[in-house]
Length: 288
Image 1 (cartoon, helix red, strand yellow):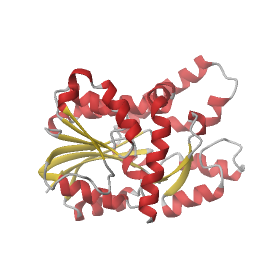
Image 2 (cartoon, rainbow, N blue to C red):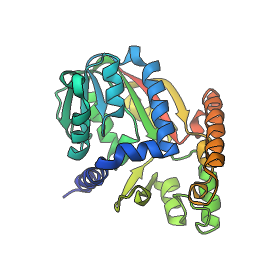
Image 3 (cartoon, helix red, strand yellow):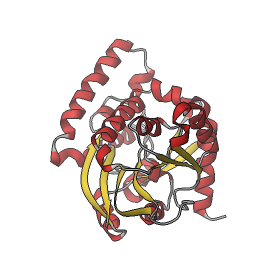
């Protein structure tokens, strides 16, 4: 079994275990709920570029697929997790005929070439696999010439790295996800780290692969995907230390702090020179 196959199988098991409570956990997490609201704004903003049929690459339990279906789009929903796809199928209702569910791996899409008119991949989907450039190549293969793809990547050099460095110096006492020096070294040198989902009741861990934006653009162009628009998000929120959520601090105070950081983040997103500091890096690309 190759390392890539092993990674795909672990991702499948990870989300199969999480899928029954995934939607509820998304709503409870300030971080995930904020990102979901941002995804909704992005999809609405780019709706004219996302024509039928549109590919939802790594659809999960279908939050974004349902948004696109309500916009009148025909969605090809692809995910590696059968458990997540079962949750999506149960939610489709009257949109079932417009959503084509496909169980498949992003690096080996079970779709013919040049059959998709647009695509989007939100939620760090491409960062789940060591061979994420192969997944990008597969996406380029199935897109028609002129098709647009809205893609999200995890940025290895986000502003939050300052917090990680401080936490590593204090031997993890600040409670970041990069509390060990080995984790931080892996992110900065190799662009990868291990994420533990224990707080969501998932006993498994999973490795994520982040990108360096200045290396991403040449790769996209080499695959025939020309960047049209780039943006960043989640620049400020994680300056609110993660450990604050676990301490006996009033929920009103935490909520007020998070809302303030949301406003700051919205302002920073509009600053051209700061978009590369976000945890999330978005690219709208056009297939040549």
